[in-house]
Image 1 (cartoon, rainbow, N blue to C red):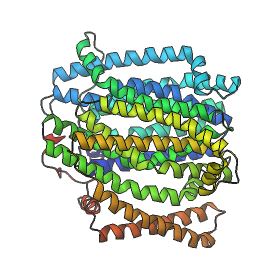
Image 2: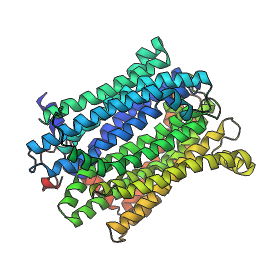
Image 3: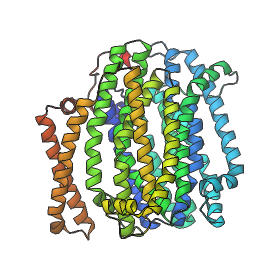
Image 4: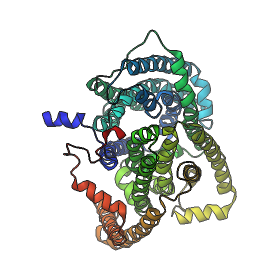
Length: 560
């Protein structure tokens, strides 16, 4: 028990240690999320009911993103660090966090209450293609879900403390408990209450998410409390810094609302297809891109505040290269093994073979932007660490508008130009099934996010790196290895197809698993022959047995 408690309270100072730790727990959380989606696919499957469930997420998610980001970890950590004496929590730091907590919670409750009242009007914008009866269902589900952004927002605020003290282990537990709550809703509550039971599970998961961070804050002796003498000047300073970032994140959420609105006009189940594929591509994104970006941020903040520009640049370079190193092979594997991945994870019960093919095609399109999404998560944090939120705002605004316009344009082209339609359907092998229009939505999203990455990369190079190239070598080495990974996996996929068969779960699983492993082995050999630095760093990190390490690899703890 003492060893377990030490692990819970352990601090991690090396970027690979922290990112691998968070990646492992994110992997566990994503595995639970996959089980969650499998249960949903099995019991309900793509349908009008499930479309209403996913559409109901949009307003609560927008509230969470819009309000929670005003007092998010990314924004608050630099303010709190300024008010601390090294690792010591000062009264000034406590007062600041208490003021933010009081104002933040009040805003969440007020906004959620207003949304509750006007939800019938909002539903007509979220799902204009739904019938009045289905829009009423969206209203009911959304109103229940409004508890979720309040709990998740509080969890984000409490999570500032665990991130500040580098308690990455316990910080990483919240998403796990969140998915446990949703799975509980699916298994226990859905048979009793129907689709509403799934919503109750979402609220339960949000409560678990918040509860973990509460205990973590208590262990750090830095718990947010209500303040009755609020310094609104400090709150104003936080708002000034965070508002551009809040708007930038909100734009992406609004773009997703527009995508759902377009999908509501498509055949029943289209929103479900989009969300299933979006969730699947989010697994590698969260494990790789988000984990590295989150783990890197405290160090970027501290090194920039201390004017240690070389350390800032070196940390950025190392993190960006790791994201590229991991993301490209995953992209190729997802494209080649898409049908096997979708069939193994979702293919049971109400989830048909046509559903499998559509989701697999959408996953392939989403996979093209996995690297772009991960790099954007990191590069936007570079500006946040420097206290500049305006640049990400303008880029996100432009790209979100582009996603909305592209969604409409691609749908229009797909429906009116048969050559384009046949090309996409033949390329993704879905020419003989209905509902392929939905594929234009992930295409538009990937197009917009890829441009988002390109613009961020250009501006970061110009503003922080003096036009120095910092991912080129890793990119081409990883790209070359990824081609071999994809080619070898594809070859063995065809070899094993008649051996294992494609009609049973075990056959599809073994076919995809062994082909993927052989492809990865081929990629590792290529990277080894190229003397890839990131592969060497990974090997060295694993040799340290970081889960047992009692000292930091990086000797200067104050860098975090």
